[in-house]
Image (tube, rainbow, N blue to C red; front, top):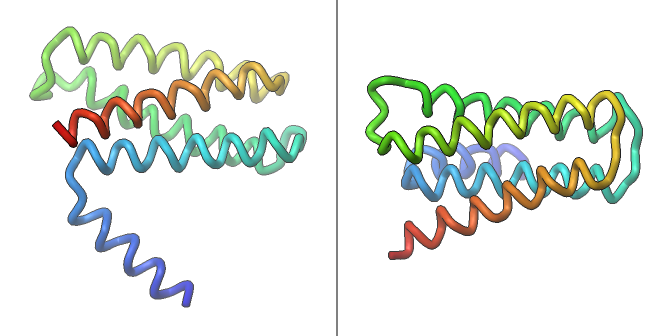
Length: 123
């Protein structure tokens, strides 16, 4: 059963439109962070894994934002870069001293951006 789910996930990733894929990844990161926050685990737990996943995801977004060949308008690229800096700072602080408000900020940003990306896709 798990293998079938993995195969489906790979096919979905390959066929998803870029904005929908980005939204799905942001929702996944938010879900992982929310679950870890709800469990209240300390450093080295599910929270650390969730923070690492979120940081890697945002590293990809940041790299795309600074890519000179990016098709995105400069203003959007600058906004992504600015949000990425905040995400990295907040993640580092949450890794050093976990606090619900730091994690909640990351969750909210991911959820809001995912909703925005999905509304763009729907338009």
